[in-house]
Amino acid sequence: MRTLILLSCTALLAMPISAAPAAPEAEVSRVLAHTPLIDGHNDLAWELRTRFGSNLDRIDLARSTLALPVPAGSVPLMTDIPRLRAGGVGGQFWSVWIPTEVKGPQAVQMTLEQIDVVKRLCARYPELAMAYSAADVRRIHAAHQIACLIGVEGGHQIDNSLAVLRAYYDLGARYMTLTHVNHTDWADSSNEAPLHHGLTPFGVEVVREMNRLGMLVDISHVSPETMRAALAASAAPVMFSHSSARSLDDHPRNVPDDVLRLLATNGGVVMINFEPDYISDAHRRWSADHEAEKTRLSSPPYAGLYLGQPERIQQALAAWEQAHPAPPVPLAEVADHIEHVRQVAGAEHVGLGSDFDGITETPQGLAGVDGFRALLEELARRGWSEGDLAALAGENVLRVLAGAETLSARLRRERAPSQAILAPAAAEAP
Image 1 (spheres, helix red, strand yellow):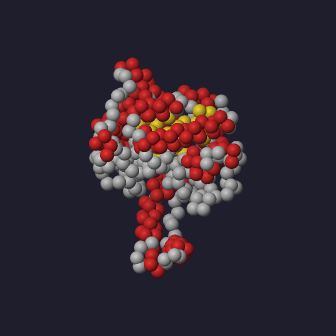
Image 2 (cartoon, one colour):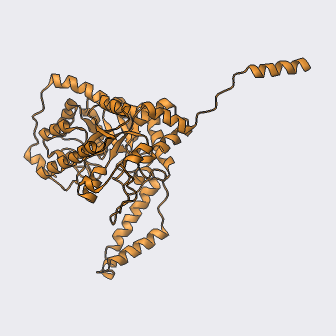
Image 3 (cartoon, helix red, strand yellow):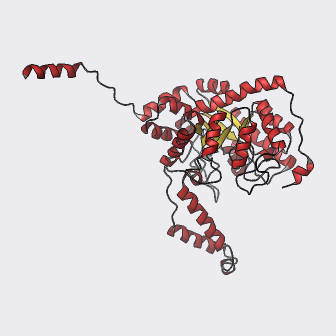
């Protein structure tokens, strides 16, 4: 017996000791040391316009923006350079969105002004640098700067002109969202009843010209029919710059599972949005009830009772909110959407598209651009490998961007710039 015990102890001592699992924080730091974390969508440029008149002398992004005065009806800014650094951001697509109500040449002018804001930001702060290609992003990240890319958020911004589209590309725009919250003359939005049932022939030509240029086709904000039409028309991988999974939250802005499977075949990427209504089905339903209550209080007979007293409507709405508090939306629910896309489309087809400074609420733990690390750490705790975390953080969208660039080099040799125009009758139809 004594011999057996000695032998057993010897065997135990000879066994290799397993290394303790790496802490999530250490895993994420290793990933972000070699992979730029790229956020697909941030609306800071528009906030700079509305709050500061695009006068960059009136704000210092090198310091925290949390202490700045907040305009009535707004929320504190979610972005500044210290928080971008804290969140590990290595690349940012800055949206140059303008309202859909702005049409024609004025829309083009306003878009140019927004592009100018992004470029002036990069000229002003040495931590930021303009990027025009996947290789640029990697080079800038290696230099410990934050790569700045431009995204046009709505096909209305080209004023139905492929020449304007090409000009935006030459100025640095590397994606365009085909619609925003309203239909364009050639593509359907997710927010309105179907009009074109996808893309018109001119809409298909827009996608083909974007392929030729090397500009990513962004199908956030579009209807499912338009998603499918764009995936069928595009020879390059496409992106959803800021959308989430519809099977977890039945919001029209989110992506159905059948489209996620088509996206995997296309080679594209869906970058998960942090807007609570797009993440939590319970919060989406609460928001619908909240909007219905606001409408009720603003309609007869209440509107007559409160005539000339808007503060009483606000008091009544506040009382409703106290009785019906919004359901919390934790960071873990954002991680659930990321995991769902990985399950349906694959780890190679998911990314991050926060919509910071374009949303007025955020999930708990994701109040600003410093929250990205916490999200990656949550996934690390769920068992995500460093390879999958790197894919999510930036490798997937860099692959998509590089793929569009490679195809563009071939298409530019094969065909001239498109001369297609939208027939006047089609432009007047909506």
